[in-house]
Every structure is written in structure tokens, then in C-alpha cells.
Length: 201
Image (cartoon, rainbow, N blue to C red; front, side, top):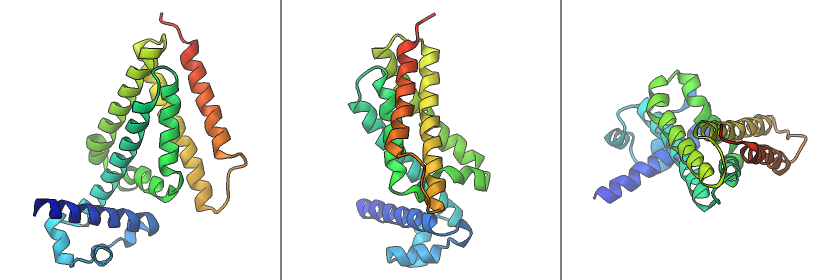
């Protein structure tokens, strides 16, 4: 019974993410979600008390998916500067095929001024990721703890920046002047060079 409920909840959240990513947030309704999943609207209330709670859960799932993708890449990466490239590459590859999900996940707190969700969800995930990257970086490079954390944050923000550019051009049905792989390679080369060139003070 519990397993079936968990599966149904996951299906509801997935449907909500797809709908939120494809349509304006203001037009998002529980009726659409119920129809997409094949359940009644009252059944949704068993899992989510209102539309806003479901929207939060949908975005929360996005951050969890992003974190899982990056953590998996970090585990496979060598200790040292390569972990920075693993982080940026995993982030971009995670969202690249569906930039609308990137827009959904990263516009949420700004559009709804949902500072509580940002504080409770986004910051802990961000802190865990950058902490793991910094730790793995220091195991293979002569980098101070503060510098390792800074480089981890810079790697993440570079990935967000590149994905923002890809998202904007995808929305405008255009493209960047340079291939994504080339831009990502330049970002990664710069990050790794910064890590290799650092020395403890």
C-alpha cells in the first residue's frame, strides 16, 4: 500500500514538473495534473493540500534530480582539479536536453519570492555539493580549504551561467555562436588551471 502511494505521489510530481515546464505557471491547475496522471482531482489532495504545495514539491524534485546527477559524477571523478570539470559538465548535461526544466527550477524562488523553500531546499543542496567538491579537490590538489570552497562555488555558478545562456537561446529558437562543448571545455580548463596554480598560504 505504502509503495503504491509513493509511486502515485512520484507520478503526480513528475506530471506537475512536465506541465509547469511547458506552460505558464499562472495557468497551472490541479485539473491538468489529475488528468495527466489519470486520477481524480480529490485524490490529489490526499498527497498535496493545495496547488502551491504541489508546485513546491515539483521544484524540490528538480533540485534533488540535479543533485543526484552531480553527486554521481563527483563519485566517478578523480580527486583533484578534475572534480571541478565533473561538476560543471554533469550540471549542464543534466539540463541541456530540457532547458525548460532549468528555467522552472531556477526561476521558482525569484518568481514566487519563495525564500523559505530556497532556504530549506536550495541552500542545503548547494552547500552539500560544494562541500563534497571542495573535499575531493583538496585530496588531489594543494589548495587551501577556503580556496577549494571558492573554486567549488565558481564551478557551480559557471555551470548555471552557461545553462542560462543555453536556456535563453533555446527559448528564442536560436543558438549560441559557439558549440556548447567548446564553451564547457574552456570553462573547465580555466577552473582546473586555477586549482593547479593555487598554493597554500
